[in-house]
Length: 101
Image (cartoon, rainbow, N blue to C red):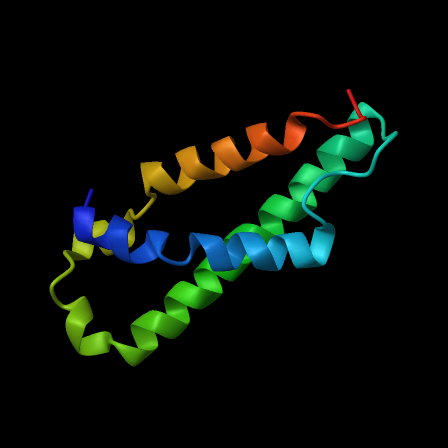
């Protein structure tokens, strides 16, 4: 995996998190059941990753000449472990202290 790709893409995490929180709230509704929690997670994740992709496309469109330094393989298979780990930490943090269990 291309380290530089991960560093560049990770810059967008706070913006994508803020957007997903704006659309769905920063935690699932209190008093919800397991199915409602899962539905909330699915919607939040979909919004988060869609915004990450949108931000990345916007960034790469502006900086296409710089993209040549990223390997074709990294662009084709770019799933950054840090992004997934950070998302899981965010989700774990949302679970703590919730009225829903």
